[in-house]
Length: 45
Length: 432
View 1 (cartoon, rainbow over the protein chains, first blue to last red):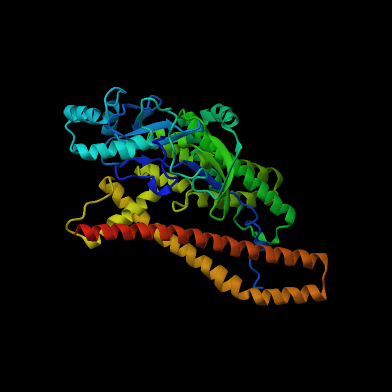
View 2: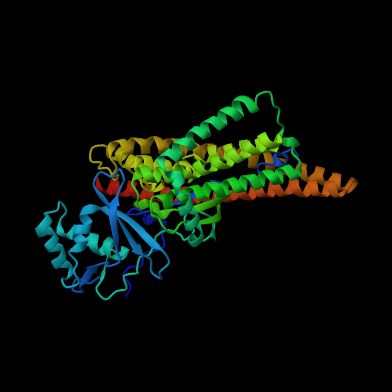
C-alpha cells in the first residue's frame, strides 16, 4: 500500500496541522501579442 | 498506517530554515517526487521536525510519539500528535515506512500550477549557465548603477524626448506592429532571464523558462521554486530581477532611438514600460504578487485570502468563542486584510469591465455587426474588405471566448470557496 497518495486537490495547500505545501513559484511576464495593435479595438460595429 | 509498522524520517528529506511571517519558527522540507520528476516543498513548524526525527525505523508510532512527548513536553496531546503523524507527516512523505521508496512525495497542485497552458521552452541545463555567467549583475554596485540608469532613462525619455512629440498608435502600419511585438517578446525574454539570474546568483537550481497561458494572457514564465529556500529579501530581489533585466531592453531601445531617430523605438519603450507596470499588479500572479508575498512573509497568498474570509465568517457568527485559523503575526494579518479587500474589489472591477465590454458592447452589437459586414461583403467583396471582416470577427470571437472562459473559471473558484465557507459556517454553528 502506498501511504503517500493524496488526492490531486489544490485545496490541500495548507492543512489543519499548519503544514503548507509551497506553491510553485512561476515568475510570469505578460507579452504584447497583438493587443498592442490599436487597430484591433472595437470600432462600434 | 498501522501503529506496529516501524517508520523512519525520510532519508532524502532536505531541511532548511524557512523565512516567513508565521507566528512560530518554520522549516522548509524538500522531498523528491514519486517518479523522480522534481520535488515537493513543505513549510512546517520547526518542532514537527523533532517529532519526525523520533521515527528511527525501529520503534512503532506509539513509542516514537511517546519519546517525543517525554523529551519535549509539547502543548498538544498524544492523540493530536498521532493524527499529525498519520494524517499529515506520513501522507506527505516526511515520515515513511522503513521499507518504502523515499522518492514518494505527491503534490496537491496541478502540474500546470495556476496556468491554463504550460510549456517549457528553455531547459534548466541551458538557462543555468547563462544565468550564472550574468550573476555578477546582482552585485550591489551593479544593482545601484542599474537603478540610477533606470531612473535617468525615464527622466530623459519622458522629460525630454517625448515632450512636444505626438504619437498616434492607431497610425502604426503592420510592419511596425510586428516589430513592436518582436521588441516586446525580446524584452520579456530579458525579463525572464532576470529572474533566473537573480535566483542563480543566490545559489538556486533547476530554473526553467517556458511559455504559457495565464487567465487570458499569453505569458513567459520562469520556474524559480528553489528560491523558497532563500531569505525573504533575496526572494524579493528574485521578484524584481525581471524588471531589472527588462530595463536593459529599455536602454537598448533608447540607444536605438538616439542612433536612428526612428519613433518606433520610443513606441517600444512605452510598451515595455506598460508591461513593467502590469507586472507589478499584486492581484494577478505576476511579480507584484510574489513581491507582496515575500516582503510581508505571507506564504501562499491566495490560500491565505481564503483563510482570512473563513476567519471573518467565524468572527461574525461567534465573536466571543472565535479562535483565528491564521497563524500569521498581527502585522501580516493586517496586510492580508487590506490585500484581500483590495483584491476582491479588483476582481469585481475586472468582471464588471468584462461584462460591460463583452455583454453590453460586443454581444449586443453582434447582430448589427453581422448585418453590416454581410452587406459590405455582398456589395464589395475585395480582399481588403474580406481581411477586415475576418479580423473584426476574429477579435470578437476571441473576446467572447476569453471572457466566457474567465467568467467560468472565476465562477468555479467562487463556487468552491463559497462551499468551503458554508462548511466553516455550519461547523461553527454546530460547535456553538
